[in-house]
Amino acid sequence: MKIGFIGLGIMGKPMAKNLVAAGHDLVVRDPNSAAVAELTAVGATGAGTPREVAEQVQLVLTMLPNSPHVKTVVLGDEGVLEGAHDGLAYIDMSSIDPLVSREVSAALAAKGIGMLDAPVSGGEPKAVDGTLSIMVGGPAGIFEAYRDVLTVMGASVVRVGEIGAGNIAKLANQIVVALNIAAVSEALVFAQKAGVDPEAVFQAIRGGLAGSTVMEAKVPMMLDRNFKPGFRINLHIKDLTNALDTGHAVGAPVPLTAAALEMMTALRVSGGELDDHSALVRFHEKLAGIELSRGGPE
Image 1 (cartoon, rainbow, N blue to C red):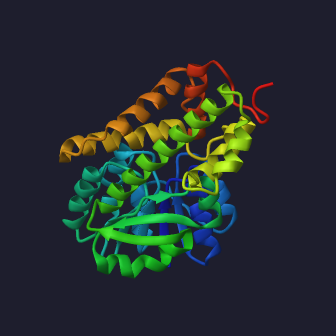
Image 2 (image 1 turned 90 degrees about the horizontal axis):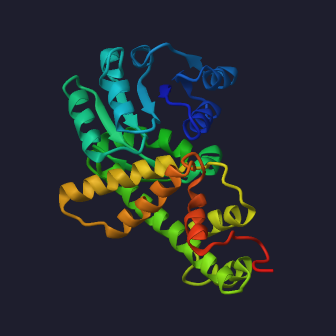
Image 3 (image 1 turned 60 degrees about the vertical axis):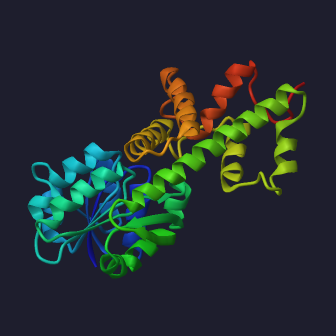
């Protein structure tokens, strides 16, 4: 299938490479010329604008930072909408405000273009190996038509409802992930401050009810002081802000989410916004006056 892919960042680049490896004919667009060059080196074709991408393909995928970027790429000058043609479909895999997904979908529908919102979870490692979890909102017919494309990038592809539902599910996911990281950070700092090796505590509790995918992925990073971003704090702040805004709009209070957002905001203020969200442990370390380490207290 001839597919357009717009947004070749930490997540988008490996996702696009997996589509090329699966035999799809890709037309790509990103402001980062080096990222575009990596894709053209493996067989993709570059394009100058989102409109040019849309004009050449059957399906456009986007993987962009936030709502304003999606609106610009799709609805702006030289955007996807200007390249509309019969048979074109659009899947946004960004994590954005669900209300914006619905706004973009309505604009596309007026030109006869069907849309899915299909945000992902799993971070860079799962983007690389094609095992992301993909949460999809939109018409069932469009979902079935392009399910096979999505399964190239994800091990779990679930339609959860109509347009916007994918991003509602993603925000729920991001709430759970943020609170897990915060809880794990607090627990391990607590253990070390109380005189116990945090790595030993991790080994003791990981197989019980407290164990989680988040714990398995993030505790080794915390202990190794490895905060190279798989998912940056500033992006998690964006997601939690969208969760608060959506919660306020629908009347669903999210007090724990608000607390996690404030912790991450404190890290951003101190210059850590580009670190992996596992660096949330630094917030708890600062409160306790210690730094987490393998072996714990001397």
